Length: 92
Length: 92
Image (cartoon, rainbow over all chains, first blue to last red; front, side, top):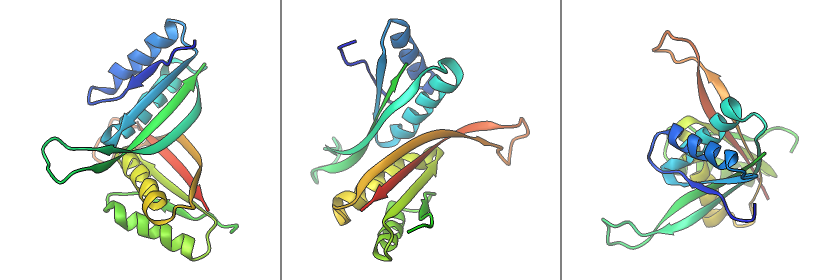
């Protein structure tokens, strides 16, 4: 798969994103990128753990990267703030 | 350093843990393990990002591992639940 199969984690229940990952793998993806930032980071880890422990035991975590994004809150006027990000690559 | 310099992330403010990491490095540690589980995971990433971006730019993330712990809630009687964990190793 040349294209980038990304699942961006937001505020929905963990199972929604688990299903998105499984759907990508069933559609033939060899690799899925799970991305999240801020408070969604713990949900991203939950998603990866549920996918590989409950549904697809042949899936392995191949890469985890963390970083920082500049972020401008809509409801504040004092400029930028930082938000942590995570990107987890899982592959089968 | 042969011993394991671990900083376990809980519910305190991020800066408390940042200070703990910096203190370990200043005491001569070559490597610090930042560990967290559940909702503290996003705080663990914040700690690592603040340490390496604001205070110790020579610190690098050398390893990130995720996993699942069995966990028995005190206020529930229906047995075990799962909690995601993260362990981030930073070194200078």
